[in-house]
Length: 339
Ligand SMILES: Nc1ncnc2c1ncn2[C@@H]1O[C@H](COP(=O)(O)OP(=O)(O)OP(=O)(O)O)[C@@H](O)[C@H]1O
Image (tube, rainbow, N blue to C red; front, top):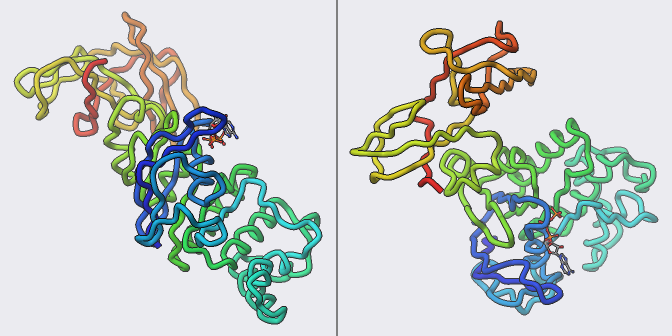
């Protein structure tokens, strides 16, 4: 089902928390609402579900206005960070609960619960109660219960937050596999940009209650609309310069570019910065942090002290204090007008 938000605003306790957010989640796609703590992600998710009323704008589900529909009539299901299973019910009873509420017989809902338990790799846990299961298993039951409800739109509120990294990775794979199998329109709230990039068809980056960019993972990472957006997606190096007659010139790099004349900053990701051993060795290695596949290095300019991050493939023969030259991949430059 397609979900469309049209100029949604939300005020809580007299304060505007969501400011005229518009975005469309196409049928069967996976979209992340990404942003720092307090930017309004959960509020927007709860507004889509109908738990929090909007103060302006419209929510359109499958082409029809859903503004007046109560939560249970929207076909949306929300999975919360704390999962909210019924503690006195077994896994199969928890999963079957939404079907029982709709009048399914015990035989019917237990059959569906058994099928879903298998899908979330929990066969054999039918009779377990939440206190007898691990955090990861509880999360799988919560996901199965959400799927049992047959949602048109699945809303996930930081569901991986409390898990350790390995489990988190397993759950991401499982959620994506099921989302694709059931072709459910899904909205994930997360503050983890790598999670958002790796899981989503599109990412909506939120800041201060607004969506500042809504694009595919590749575009939002490679072509951020502002420095603010770029900074959300990890380390970057900024080189001040100017463009004249289609040439960007700075004290570190010169390249041709199709932009109007003016003062600019060229942004490079650490992977676009190359360390060399020939030419002018103007940079000194002052930090090397081992990351497995590579080292994350910090280099300081000999004279200005300006610091630059770069990735160095592992294994490497560089040591702290070594002097090196730097070059930048001009094809990976992102230009922002100088602030
Ligand atoms: N009931 C409420 N009354 C007043 N302000 C609220 C209420 N609920 C949330 N807020 C405020 O709205 C803002 C957005 O909160 P929200 O929970 O949507 O943020 P978030 O981006 O999901 O953050 P987090 O990642 O920490 O969960 C915060 O500043 C919060 O303090």
